[in-house]
Picture 1 (spheres, one colour):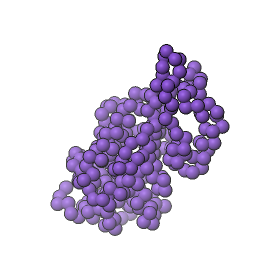
Picture 2 (tube, helix red, strand yellow):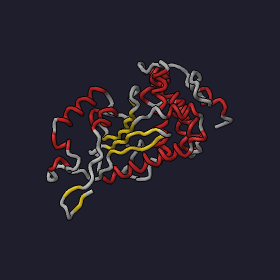
Picture 3 (cartoon, rainbow, N blue to C red):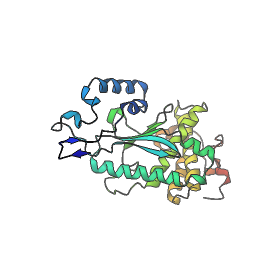
Picture 4 (tube, rainbow, N blue to C red):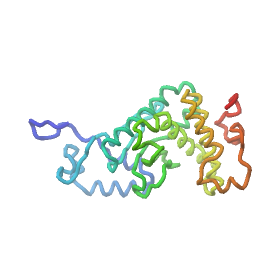
Length: 264
């Protein structure tokens, strides 16, 4: 907060480099970022605005980094400075709406399913290609979910309301399943293995979105993705017959109960 009559800020910047270090996609990148931060003494003064150089730098919202609660667990959300202020606000609203949906409907899923979703320890939103990140994904060890600002994923320049918070909740749920697969020793190395992991995660997501009462169109998309996970994995599955019934998907996956669904 800036006090114009005093000519200074009266509350400190809440940014915490240690959280940034902890939630980096890799330990090496976290240590590099921490090293750059502590070698700039102006960073140590949390009452300074943009390193005391507002003619060169800006911090447009102060809301780029914040903490929220997902199923009783504190997580950090970081929306990149490279994304415009208006877009940041739209994305923040969708993430907050998605997390609220998951929290408000937690009673409709099992404790085991809730524990899987709590694999999410942080959410980063970046421009496509920023820091060499070209696609959304989760760090299997740290649980930090990085989302690229791409059409149909979390932001659309044509429609501010698209995609919906229900869809964003779905992709959060989807990626929360991958660390669980990793902990159980399932492989991601080959195209076929990666395709199987995607199908399982999509089936898990469809199970959760159906139980939570999301719009049927959301659940239907994840059911479809559980059958055919997309072009990235297309070739391995052309060599074998794809399942025609979503009940057959993810038979090895103990968390999904698609066989209990009556029809689609």
